[in-house]
Image 1 (cartoon, rainbow, N blue to C red):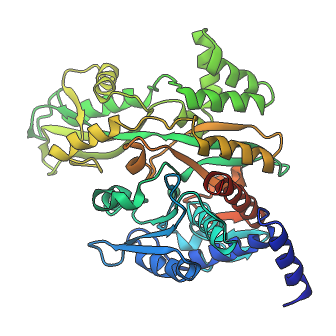
Image 2 (cartoon, rainbow, N blue to C red):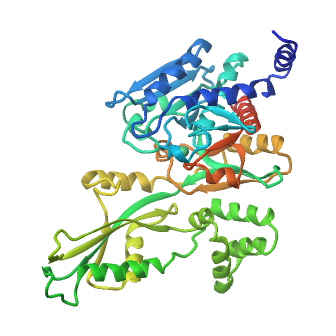
Image 3 (cartoon, rainbow, N blue to C red):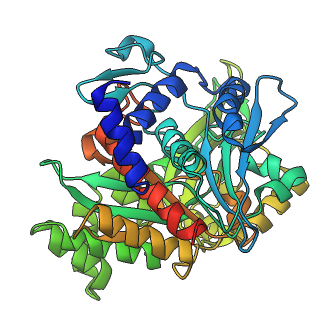
Length: 475
Ligand SMILES: [Zn+2]
């Protein structure tokens, strides 16, 4: 043992709540996680489960690995037993990542390199960084022999980035292993200013939902040598042009009101005025002006409204036939509480053409069909935002204030879907956080090239989560 190792060892023993000695451990763990290529498809999360078992089992965790019909995929659960006086807390992180355009990376995306103070590799932010932080914080409870009042469950998820063997699949047969009082997952951001200080901490209490709609234009099917005015492809094109020129109205909910108010407090004019007007103004012109300015940022544009994105076009089958119909599929990402029928009426009103119909794209474009769609709708209706009135939320805010003094903490609406529906649809609060301060520039690399997370941010995240667990599960 070197002198330095001895010093850090002693400090860790004296101040168990201070994770400084463990920080390099989180970065090192993240390097190892990145080296297991879990690009989905195919996923390969079974290899991750086998690796995690070697880390957790020697520390006394109860391990459950659930194989899926796809032999390369598995769900991994590690449980550290408490005295049972409170219901468990669960920390969930998806093990799969999206694929890479390898030639566009400056380093091997699966080598887990540390470069310029960053761990760089696919999943560094989404969500192997979070998996490393959650795993490290949970393992520290065992290493430091903390007496727990509740079980602490760590779940490494398969198929979050796509595929069917996700947490919903797991919950059908193994809900008893996932049941908890509340849980942590991916979601909000800890955003840094250009000078490196933390601007705000956001914790997601809800995710946007999604629905795909089919826009179908009809016309006369006939020989292409004698075109008629009711050509389905032209009709669809005109309908799509109207949708392209249209945008939905801002629709704020409690979490986004709080979020935009936080942005107001942490911005300078004129942006602070725009954020203020978006939340508070009754003047439609002022709100419109604010919306236009704020919507320059695609993320902010997305979290304040239902978004519309065309994703497929389909028409025609022969060079000498005018087809009788033409279709476009729209993927809409919706604010919690949005009614699909109202959304369809809105799209029909925008198109305003009796030859064009809008329906749910059931059974296509990722939407379940038939009875499964009805089941999906019922489940989606139960996805209400998680309460701020819980011990876990309060402690997260408190610990965030301790680590980032003076930095506002706000709720947030996650702009996409996550694997939290398995819990939220059962009324169990889920709080989402990417537990590491990152810059807006780092954020653009997520799902992109040279994805990276600062090494020191992993330390701060581990401190935040470990200290939160000490309060919530050990007192
Ligand atoms: Zn993710």
